[in-house]
Length: 388
Image 1 (tube, rainbow, N blue to C red):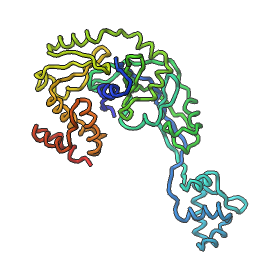
Image 2 (image 1 turned 180 degrees about the vertical axis):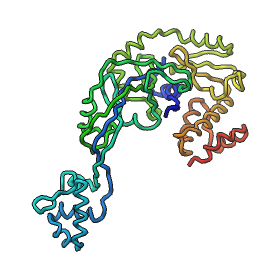
Image 3 (image 1 turned 30 degrees about the horizontal axis):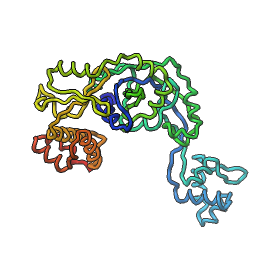
Image 4 (image 1 turned 60 degrees about the horizontal axis):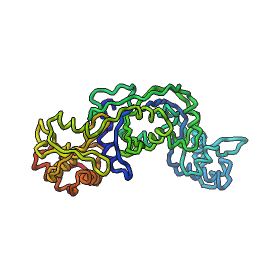
C-alpha cells in the first residue's frame, strides 16, 4: 500500500466535465483529516448448519422437543450422537440446559430464523471517522484503491501529475463514544461494521489524511473526488456543505484570468496554438500537429488530457482526428494494464469513454491489438491477452 499512486487529478477532471449542468472552473487538491480507529468486538461468523444441527434446532423450536431423549426418539438417532450435537450447540451459545430441558438461546433463535449458524468470535475492525463532524465514512470508502496518508506530507512519487495537496486541519479531539455509539446503530453495516456484533471496544486511534480534489464550478458549487469508484464522492460533497472553513479557504484563493494563465503557458513552452473556451466552460488549447511526437515534443497520450496551473486546467487538443485516434489507442493500451481492468468488457467500456472525450469513433479490441503490434508495443499486450 505504501507505493500506491494517489488518485490522479486528470481522472477527476475527466469525470467532472461530463456531469450535466456543471461548468468546472478550478481544482483544489486537499488532504481531508480523518481518524483511523482500531476496534475489537465480538462478531458472529455466518456458517451453514450441519444437517443434524439444523434438524435438532428445528425439533426444539418447531416441535417443542425439549429433552435430548425426545429428540433422539423423534429422529431415530442414537442418544449419544444427539448429546454430542447438543454439546456443540451449547458450546457456541445456541442452546442451554435448564432443569433437564434443552432450550434455544436468543442467539440460537436468531440463527434459526435466518437459517444461518452464527458462531461468535473476536474480530478487529478498522473504522474511519471524518474529523470536522465526527461522522463515520460509508462502506464505499473501504473498497477499491482508496489511498490514505498517515501524515499531511505527500510522499515523493505518490502523485503522478505534480498536484500539491493542501492539508485541512480540525481542532476536534477524538472521543471513543463516537465509535462505540456507532455499534448501537441498526445501519452500522453501512459504515464497515458487521451486522451481528456486540461489545464494540476502541483499542486505539491515529490521524489519517484522505487525498481528494474539490472542483469548483462556475456557479460556486463543489464537486469532490477521492477515487471512490472513479466517480464523485457524495460523502465529501455533503461535508463541504457542513464545514464552512472549506468554502472560506476556496474563497480566499486568488482567481487569475484563465486566458492569461494559458496564454503564458503557451509562451513559456514556445508552443504554437490557439485558446478558446468551450460551451461547457472548459478551456481548450489547440496545438499545432507537430507539437506531438517523440521527446521533447508532447507524447500522443497527452492529447485530450488536462494541464494544471494555478488551480485552473486546460484541455490539450489537436484538430488532427488521426492523431486523436492514435491518442485513444495509446490510452486504451495503458488502461489495459490497470489492475482494476479485469475483463475485455471493462476495457471496452473505458475505451468508449476515452473515444467520446477525444471525439473519435470507439476502437475495437481487435484494432487495439493490431495497433500494438504495428507500433511494436508488445509489452502492453501481456495483460491485454489475459483479460477474460
